[in-house]
Length: 598
View 1 (cartoon, rainbow, N blue to C red):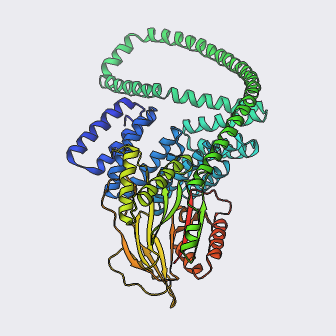
View 2: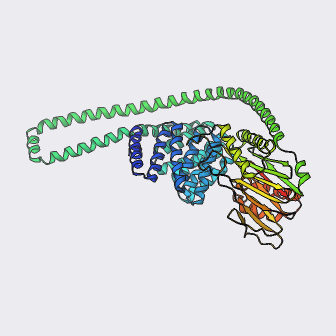
View 3: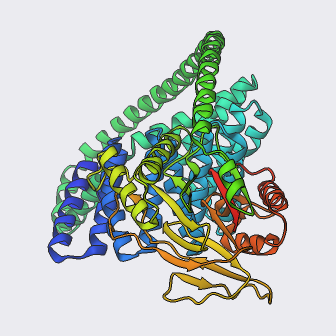
């Protein structure tokens, strides 16, 4: 109740007391809800770091309970909070996690909110096309479920984007939709937001009459919001008056007696009151006329000042544009240099050309530098190959990838270790030491998802270990398998080849709540067998006719169908499939996929 009334200090006191009681009762769901409510309070007070801490508390508990409803809600809340801190990579990660769960749970209301949040995020980043794609998705769902409040919010954001993009015609169209819905709902805050937006649009079009009209509307709504508390106090005074009047009626006989004695006095008082009321009414009319005149004069002055400010801002923007262009050119040169540095850390292909029947590497960074990397080296009779996906992409991911390559060189080439589980274990130890990870609840969980293969070139002995990343193996003869880490696919039927998925350990190379030993799969493969290693970028790419993910099922089908082709033709097929699927959609992550034929 205090939260709804806007009394945040009292609301925070009661939410904190609720959290204490829920902790005493060991009521996990109650703790999740209380933490989430407290986080809302801190976010409204712009204490975003504290809000993040509380959201993370709730998310950790929800993950332990596999409470997908609250996981989805909290992922989206985390994303929106990171957006307010301008930490857009983290915001994008959490909002998309929430979106995936909401789609899986078929929660249309929350799905629409996630799409709206993505639209806001891409708008802040200046990626207008991507922003509008997600806002249109949000609009479609909110129309279907008749979420009028959400529609008003989405239309306002679309209108603001078109206004910034220099399309006042489209801005006006969507702004009017937002204004109409807000008026139908009667929410003063929504009406104020839409009216302010329409005033800006008409001011941009030099339509000062309509600009003034909507500006005045926003002022009235603001006055309404400011006076809401005073209005509540007025209602309480009215209730008190009605109670006292009822008490007076209970002593009616006494009141009649007093009225008879003072009838003449009351008559004179009535005449006096009429006179006073007439004077007050006259003064009120004069005051209203004067105030309207003054507001119009102030509005004209405001419009004049705004025009002068716009001209001044235009000159300032031109100067800032030159500064930004210089910064951009310097930054581009730095990133291009970083790209060249990262390329030098990737291995040469002559090692594979001298040891394998064929191979291909499809490597497509999202930005100029990549958080994915591939690596191989020959150690005696053994060929060690790794494909990895580091936390993040772009410059932060590139730093992690260069650390990963350095550690692989140290462990495999310098220390001559080819056992795949040992390679992952030692890499995890060194990453934790290098990044000084302590396993605290709120520290960044930087790490690497990767697959490592060690192949004996003489005997065909094949060893695999994975940290979250599986691999696919296509063989000419059926394998004798044990345990649950080598799974023969029943999706594809062929008399000449067999498809296997080798399962990873469900933990990254880095600090994690689960720190078990990495395990390995040992097989024997024959000449002509092919194995595929990859990051999650290909399967997670949005595209196609409906803007959905490619997913691993399509990836398995693609690799099975092309596995009989020469490796160069396989590369061409993989590249064409990815580009055709993406077709106008933004690439969302780094992509690496390699095929290796024994």
